[in-house]
Image 1 (tube, one colour):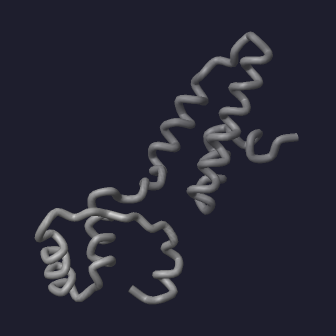
Image 2 (cartoon, rainbow, N blue to C red):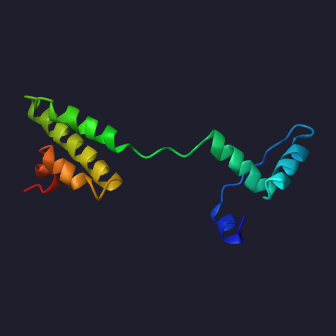
Length: 116
């Protein structure tokens, strides 16, 4: 692992290994032409991948369901609904900045894009 990458990894974790595991990790690391640390990280990344980004279709589906909701007659709850919609729209825009605005306009959420 490059030194600059190594510096970015600041979390350290002390670990006790059962007899023989260090040798197995070392052998695997050598076979994969990487350090033992990089080998352990590769296995951990495979087993515990980073959270996936939201899918475009999933976001559109969520917005479609939101669009079908009736406004709550209680003004406080209706305000909460609007805030929740705005939060979903912000996430959609952050995840898909190139395509989200056109989809939001097409779905009738343009008032959330440009509140006035």
